[in-house]
Image (cartoon, rainbow, N blue to C red; front, side, top):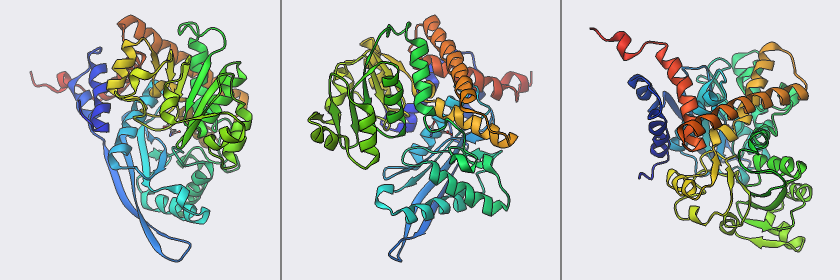
Amino acid sequence: MTDNLFDRALERLDEAARFLNVDADVIEKLKYPQETTKARLVVRMDDGSRRSFLAWRCRYDDTRGPTKGGIRYHPDASAEEAETLAFWMTFKCAVMNLPYGGGKGAVKVDPRKLSKAELERLSRSYMQAFARVIGPERDIPAPDVYTNAMIMGWMADEYNKIVDRNEPGVITGKPIALGGSLGRNDATARGGFYLVRHLAKDLNLDGPARVVIQGFGNAGQYMAELMAGDGHKIIAVSDSEGAVYDENGLDVTALIKAKNAGQRVSAFAAENGLKAISGDELLEIESDVLVPAALEDMIHRHNADKIKTRVIVELANGPITPEADEILNKKGIVVLPDILANAGGVTVSYFEWVQNRQGYAWDLEEIHARLLKIVEREGRAIWNIAQKNKTSVRTAAYVHALARLAEAIEAHGTQDFFADY
Ligand code: GLU
């Protein structure tokens, strides 16, 4: 078993290929990123000094359309991580049948240590460095970990200056006033929520569920709100510094308000006389639904066995290692995998791009109805593949996506087609 994030991601490709009769060319094409650009962003800091930050943009595969995927700001970002996330985006877009390939970008930076003005200069400098590889018909970024609508707005503005025209379709997740779409802010959580609701009977989740959420950023907060609104009980929530637990159910509105005012969840626990626990302890709480909504590799071979839940909904990308996956499978825990469960985000990004190209804005009901239809259609298809092949839902999702990717790659000709008999 390899410790390399990218190699571990490729294991999922091999696993899916066992269930399909795909041409060897397909695997050869999908085994490597198509193009990864690296740059050093030099940014003027508020004190007058200049600091440089490493940055990447990976376009993994564009056979099915322009590459699509977020930009992450994180101190642990690396080329390998960006390429792995871009590989996942390739499969995620194929799962939802969006006319996109996969991409991802990153800056190695702790954005919490920058002032707002420094953050703006960094974001504009990212677009200056990568404008040549990005474009509405080439590669379309969006928010990811520690990036948001305002950052997308700065980047779109910078791109518009470079090309000297207004191209709202160059980036998604923009502020509504700058061509963003209604419903993009909660789309990642909403997609996961629709999926759980649709599969509730199959997952034996009739009735109110006890829900634990790891990570309380965009996806985690909206998931808490949507699940609580549907009658479920949010019993524990964590952020990067600790967790809060209340078996009677947390007040989600108060928690979100405190978090957005800069309070940590452990401080919220102390202030409200609730139980503060560690992030590790959170994973061991008995629940019906566990939602990893933070970063990759949070559930691994050392803690997977301690998890006491029935269904895991991966709102984060890659939160479970392949070894942990096996342990969870054996325990009978059903995992709704990232490339399906968190694909609502990129799906509404796609709607934003379509609206930008049409020059016409849809109302929120239309966004929700279209998202629901796609989540239910692809979720059901994947569930059926899992039942038919007796595999995990993850393997089924990869099989479903690989079939679409293979069809597109094979449409350019297969080994049999070109062989000289
Ligand atoms: N960063 C999100 C993801 O990992 C959204 C990507 C997008 O909207 O393009 O799916």
